[in-house]
Image (cartoon, rainbow, N blue to C red; front, side, top):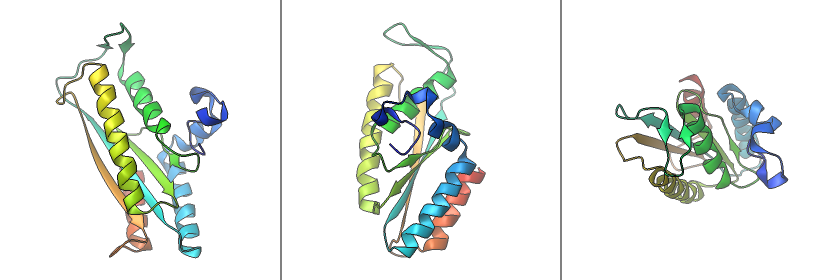
Length: 168
């Protein structure tokens, strides 16, 4: 994975130099802008998926899991990040968590492909949340997909969504 995970290249997740680079939404945004220019020049697809994680008021840290593991908020975000990275291809980019948000840049992927990936991610996230016995009120997530080119959307629309992701 070109991303942060690096597990496909036998690089341990926490030690990945890419992870430290793209952990920042600013660096992720620079890559996104560069890939957008490339997509426009070579008439290829580019999709951005954002996931906003919101912890419910009733969620108390630390969380004790069924296996006896204790999770604090950073552990939970790291685990969610790891799970998301496992669903991606080597050519995809993923940001770190900042302000409860994570971004995924899907190179040469249409909106339809991004929607399929998002369904897979939602399924995996729901399974994980069930495995640590979190109810649906404890953690919610909102998603957004923007693709280039897409009907009614142009390069500027994509860049605005990318900038909004970085700035919030």
